[in-house]
Image (cartoon, rainbow, N blue to C red):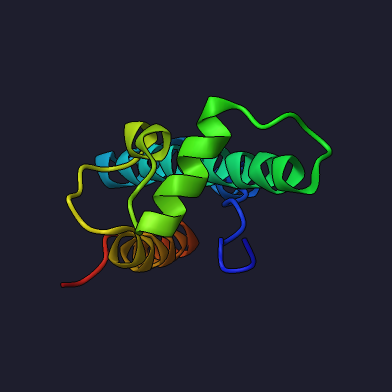
Length: 117
């Protein structure tokens, strides 16, 4: 959980935009950032639930058991995969890629201009 990045502050990002700033690139950047926030939020909440279930504060559900099994098997949880981008990577490589994608979203939303390749 400590490695999971914080959600992007979409209110702050959108507050920096003027009407004329909404180019196709900016719109796609905002959409990708919104989707990333949904994924990060879902991952965070499911891992908090799992921690609470393991500690005995919550009853352990089938989803919690599946998440624990997936984490131990180095697999991306099916509920995370539903909200994520398509990938066949194992969890460790998938998570490293997720961190790079979050960094890219942060870079996009900091500049809000097309990045040079």
